[in-house]
Length: 311
Image 1 (cartoon, one colour):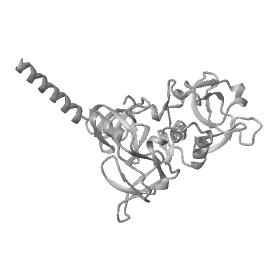
Image 2: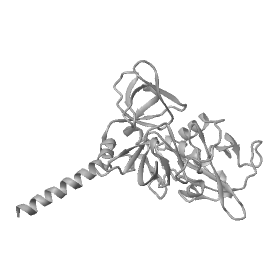
Image 3: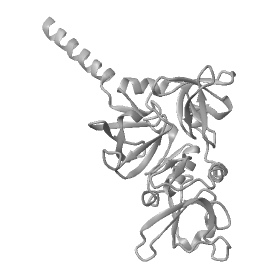
Image 4: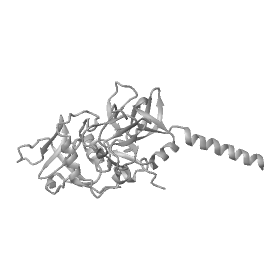
């Protein structure tokens, strides 16, 4: 009986040790990390992840990790762009006071003598707590400590609870006007069409699918002839009229006008009478608002990778 009891204790200790030490997660440690289609630098840039994004580690391939993003997207990231974490570490991180960058433009975090420590972009997540002191002390995912202008960040837990705000989507979209297009880009530094949509919606506390063709299958569908019923914040999809294949996405504003990333972030219209009309075939629209929690649309506050939702 005693031998069996000691064996159970031993097994429990081993299991707890594995829970505490085995890396099964990664946190992005730089402002914008590149995600590639294969484990090499010369492979296609398929997406990006910003500082503080939790990634599930799937397997290791030399210096590269195969990872899954919070939206379910699978890709490869070089190991020096992340810090690895155990399940225990991640549970602690989800419970720590954290701050999210709300600044529209790229900002800098500085050390105690005013030297730059890192750049930060919209929606980067760091550990820290606002206490009425400016600048606020923060801890980066890799443990580096720095200071950030308090006006440029917000408490992550309250930020995640924000309501849908279509004007906020347009505001951040307009703040990126002229930003260059980058295939696979998904930060305010440079972005592709679906990355632009993702940045706009993440700023409003919502995670969408990565690619335009995936985003097109979410929310409430609006047929192209009914475009005048579109509301600010709806997504517009463009592509091949003969096959229905989606190749482009935009964020609707008003009166037929939309914001999108095509060469650069700019404004165009689906109204043939508009001077900024583009003739790219408009296939359909979808409404995200009111459909949070459905397939492919999740509020950050409900995502178990960001919060210990079951506690």
